[in-house]
Length: 609
Image 1 (cartoon, one colour):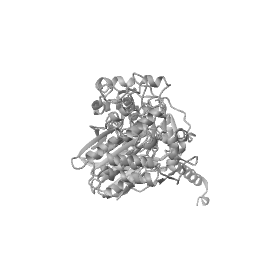
Image 2 (cartoon, one colour):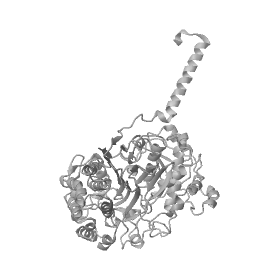
Image 3 (cartoon, one colour):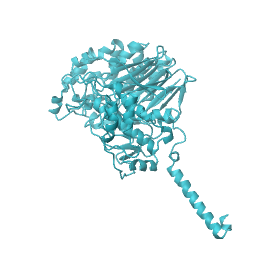
Image 4 (tube, helix red, strand yellow):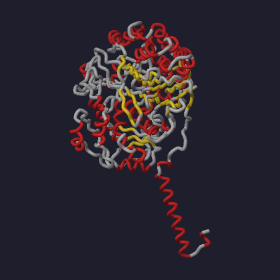
């Protein structure tokens, strides 16, 4: 058509076509929706009678089996956790820790059970300093495992079925065996050096001299025998009976500190959960020694902004949530530890709306806080509002390599692994949210001889600096990163959600929650869009350094990354997808239908009926 037009009119039309094409291309490149997926990779799973979400399909099936047999959400959750210990051995098991949040539909109460164990009585700062520090694996890396007692306490107080019924699916999996998944094979390979040190471990996870490969069947008869003992005698056999004796003797034989007395003295406990109201939603978290307050504080800070107006995953939005999280982690590292051993934690003040306003005032929309943010003064909010504005250094603009980081693994361990999570909602709308962990992959690397289970390496969370709130003290629990969550709406049960991932847990939980509540995504969409992770605070893991990076996925549009770099964020680009490894089940408040989703990571799976 243009070929038939001559003179200036033709020139103007050509110029106009070029400008229109350029504008359209620029818009498509710069628009956040240009690179956004149009639909979820996985469907929203919907059901009415019960639903289980966990880190492995066989674990979810174990919980679902209990629901089919008439068990409630608590019964199903403990069955799921027990099965996770069999099929997710890198993440959880009898030798790990656990936090449990329970919503009881009959009374409308939210219960919290703390299943985190303390340091052994012989574990002192001097002992570890004389040996060059706390090791990452082996017999000196373990504290008292608390998960078994917490699971038993939950079952005895709030469940309806026996130990025998609830543990049977896990026993069957351990006796008959299950195929090693590609994800498990990946973690075996990453931890080969650790696992190969201990004959009790190689006897299970090596076959004919090589690590178990995807599809090979692994049988754990010794683990099954320990589960059978717990099923027959209850939780205390693990601490005071035959299993406890085997554990203590094994640790003693290998130079460990954990003793019969440490195990016998341990008891899980109930405590009051913490919660805040965010735009009409009551969000419940685990109290200290958990970092659950980080999620709640961040929500309080962000409540003062119009997030929808900023746009989902725009540079201003990502900058805002990143800065809010930095401030919350600064408070965590200043104030939070085991409340039995540290100065009174000002949790009420940390979670107040006035304190959130004072912290909100620190956020510069155009410049990132350099390195670590300053902790606040929750007991002196009024005076702090002015003084704190001058207490931090803004970051300078970064020249950032936007290429994919060469260190990126196939599955980013910082956002997806090292712990596992499950949630269950039953037909009566009882809700259970559980995070359990061995700490690092396969914990200490040591299977406890005839007891057949892997022991944790949670000692790597303790500090050896005497002035640190999380300094090692015999009998003290470390500050924990695990923090499952529950949500109520207008006094009614609404959602259970959580994730593995160490220090990343409240970060990915926050982004998932905002995706759902602020941006109206369905539960599966909210788990699959890009998410970011900050490390501008001292890590919970040894050597407790602050990396001062903002990890972003390749799926985040280039112009957003450039804008974040211009604000001073030091970016690392990673090839991962989804919002950490978050799993969630919610209740449709109108129909009562259950809707579940899982982030597309590892072996995560949700099942409903």
